[in-house]
Amino acid sequence: MDVHRFEKVWIGVSLVLVVAWIATVTWGAVGPPGIHMIDDSGGTVKPSAIANNAFADTSDFRAPGVYQVGENHYAAYVVARQFEFAPGSAQPIQVPANSRVTFYLTSPDVIHGFEVVGTDVNAMVIPGQVTKMTVQFDGPTSYGVVCNEYCGAGHHTMAGTIEVVPRDQFQPTGTNGTAAGATGGSA
Amino acid sequence: MSESDRPGAALTRRDVLRGGVVAAGVAATGATGASAQETATYGGWFGGGVKGGSVDNFEGTTVDERGSSSVTVQVGANGNGGTFAFDPPAVRIDPGTTVTFEWVSDTHNNVVEEQPEGGDWQGHEPIENTGFSYDHTFQAQGIYKYYCQPHLPLGMKGAIVVGDVEIAPSTEAAGPGWTWPGGDAGVAFVGLLFGTVGLVVLMAASSGGVGAVRRWRRAAVEAASAPLSEAEPGRGLVRELGHDEYDPVGTAALIVIYFLILLVMWIFVYFVEFLGRGPRVIG
Image 1 (cartoon, rainbow over the protein chains, first blue to last red):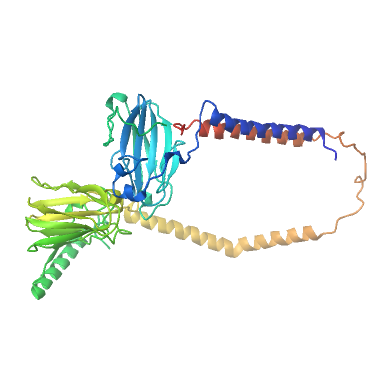
Image 2 (image 1 turned 180 degrees about the vertical axis):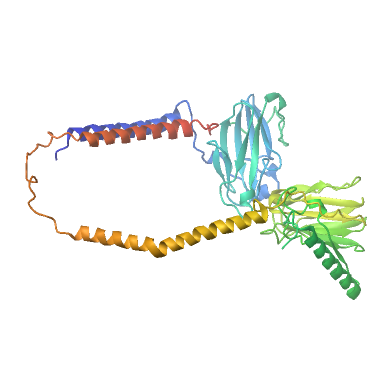
């Protein structure tokens, strides 16, 4: 088979591009950007315990709210249910600026989505499973949160807010642990 | 069809309805001596304009339970597109009456939006499921407004009127509904515009248009079926080229352009669109 020398050139360039793309994604995952896949490390929880607000009975989930778990590390526990994020919908999820926040998400009823609009923070919220993901927030701003898995008649109304507030205005809202002694999140 | 989800609907219509319902209520009272009903919109609370969605299971009537010693409100009754209603949505009771809130479906709570001075109703903010119930004895006279937090946008709202207080007549806070720009003249103009354009299109299609398309098709068919002329001068073999002697420069240029597009897309999708949209999941 004769391959024209022009063709040899562009076949070669194509192969280089394919390798470069794979290298880019690999660099994003293991290099400085540190893109992380959400796995099952969040553990499991009984949906009935979440439905009955029996957070004390669960080891992998705490009462909804934001807890301080490290010097600059916070844990946000959010319940997604038909059709609200708690916290998030009635009150915004407040987190301090320039901090690392680990979200723990679960649902007592059906599968929901947790998408921070306009960002790459986007996960499924599954009954029985704790979705755990860590996010680095920058300066004060506000993000919208939407449910992106159809969850029932009021799905289109299911939305919330994350407020990144200056550090001196931040108050941990978690109720079953103190800021200093909390041990819930260590991602 | 609820009046309350028609903000700005003619007052006269509501007044007529109110008159009708009151008359019906009076008739019912006269016939059976049972509870009468009245209409009110609670200052737009049951509409969609103040907070949350409009309450479709509220049809302008406040159930009168004055004289009853205990009253039950179902939480999560059918309505508002699912089990997202308080039943009855509005009820009038005597001061000192105990109201039992009974959960008949899952994932609801009671958040008090507004209560009269001296009202001590806390609602019930934790989310509860079927079978849960609690009660509260309403002492202070006035209007209590409450809702279910997860289903507020769907219109799961209610009101309890304690005593003989007057319910504010309609002051629906929502803006006027959609109207044609320019009013009746606008409607006439749009009608005229569409009518004229439609007429022109019809006339064009029926006269010239169809004929022109037919002529074009006939010409195309004839051209395609014409026999190829053979042995035209100048079409014979002129020069034979080896495989690598010909340089497809145009094709190469096209492929270079494709590669450039791919490069730009690559940079845009990964580095701008993906990495540029922080924050990201990093753990």
